[in-house]
Image (cartoon, rainbow, N blue to C red; front, side, top):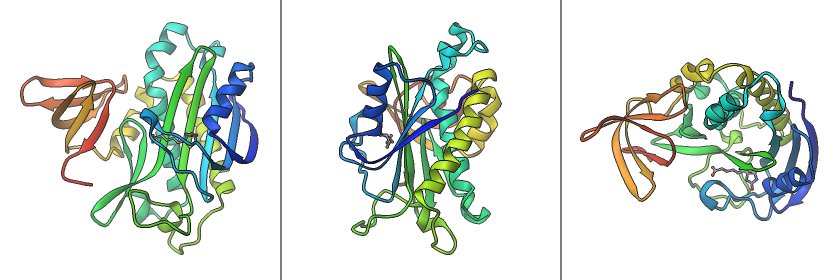
Length: 257
Ligand code: BTN
């Protein structure tokens, strides 16, 4: 099924932008761009993604429609679950470098952040974006691997801080491991329903059993997080409206930072 064709750069504006340019020129499924630094890295909702040396910045061109195994109508219906499945690939990658005691604190935060509990707070290890254009999909993944020398304690956590010896795998090792996990997950996602991944997603979901607040559209919804359903929606029990599905929005877990 998918195989990756990787090009590595020193510095680019954004690996996502680079992939979208290649996509417009007809580059094939599996084209991957990795950069050591980005001058214009960005995240979901246009947030700046700070991209100093020591992080993994990777984008991949996906065209799931090219495969016969998946019907076009089914593909459109399951597309919202692709970035959740990619979150599982990133979590598996990180956990592969960690001792079990630390690995259990690596969590998924809907829709597709990977966060780690450190002392009282959850901090972000990785962010994932998925952009669709007429020509295909651009998957963007940033993983904090080694902290930059100037870094102050912030909202991020770095893989290097989590390994027992403080010794960290190289960014290249992390990218190799990520592409292995990503390839396996993507191939499974193409021919299995998202239900196949659901228990793993829910088991490691940081929101399980917690009160959450979700900014969706112009409003905010508060309630108890129940689980992610087979369509990748967040099921929330609210006081006024019972259990409602949330398709998109920015989720905050109340009571933990
Ligand atoms: C988010 O958490 O908001 C998603 C962050 C995605 C960042 C990655 S880094 C590689 C790729 N290039 C970009 O400009 N963004 C993505």
